[in-house]
Image 1 (cartoon, rainbow, N blue to C red):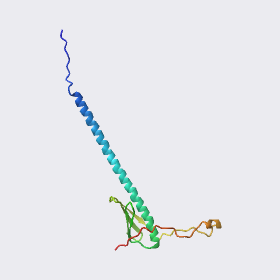
Image 2: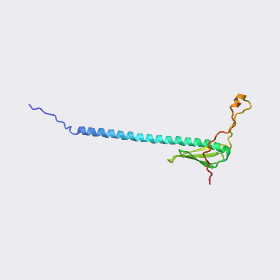
Image 3: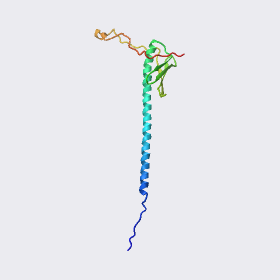
Amino acid sequence: MMVNKIRCNDEGSLLLSTFHLLLFISFLILSLTAILQHQMMQLQLISQAYEAKALIEVSEELLRERLDREDVETGTIYFSEGRVDISKETDTRYTLAATMPNHYTSRRSIEISAVENVLEPEIQGLDEEAVIGYSNEEPVSLMSFDFLEAE
């Protein structure tokens, strides 16, 4: 009696499975790397947008303080994070453009009335104890920022 041996030609099938697994893993790693790169880019853009917004808000307050004393046509305020260019569009409209060192730019137009008066508290109706804490001194302003006149 002859025993028939069933022969399977399995040579190389393990190599093919390993190759497919390595191909899938490399595709997965490349995909995750691309996703992380895009997330980092988005984080940098959001960070730059917040920094530019903060520069514009600080510049707006400095502009309002300066407009109480004099008229401003154009100006530039330099910060360590970038600069803000100010230009007068109309009598009450100003455009503030923040430029970061990597050339990211953000703009905002603001409306400022002719002279915004700061209301001081009325002293007439207050008792003497409340008046003691009130000071009529000028608030300290940041004079280190100069507005450049357009030539």
